[in-house]
Length: 126
Image 1 (cartoon, rainbow, N blue to C red):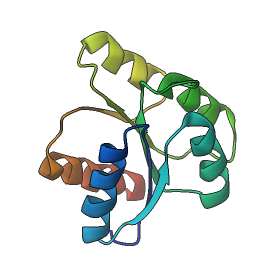
Image 2: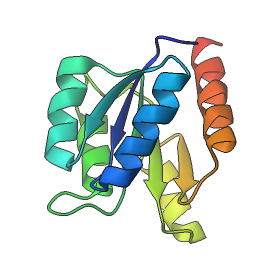
Image 3: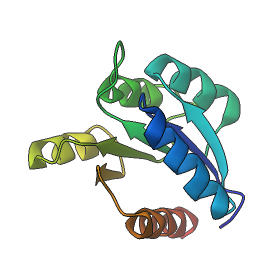
Image 4: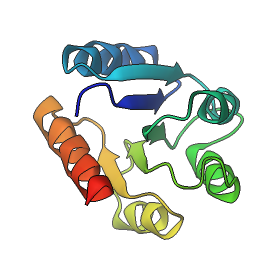
């Protein structure tokens, strides 16, 4: 499972820092993007195997980024996990309807995050 290339998209530096430290400790390769536009470019160039995508970002929100990722045949198959402080069921449902494979509410526990990554990887290789 190590050497998995994971992209994290969030406009909060603290979240990016947490993911960088946490994922690198678990031997994942980490790609960071702090905006929707940057995420779309890096997803094309880097071809991550998993994307954690924040919903509430300036200019281009996570919903728009998710739509554009799913419309592009080069990035459409990359599993996307929505990250958000929004905990309402309607947001989770929307994320899954629009093509995300999971929805993680902030704050989250590192153990929960790792379990979700393991489950996603297992499902992809099944």
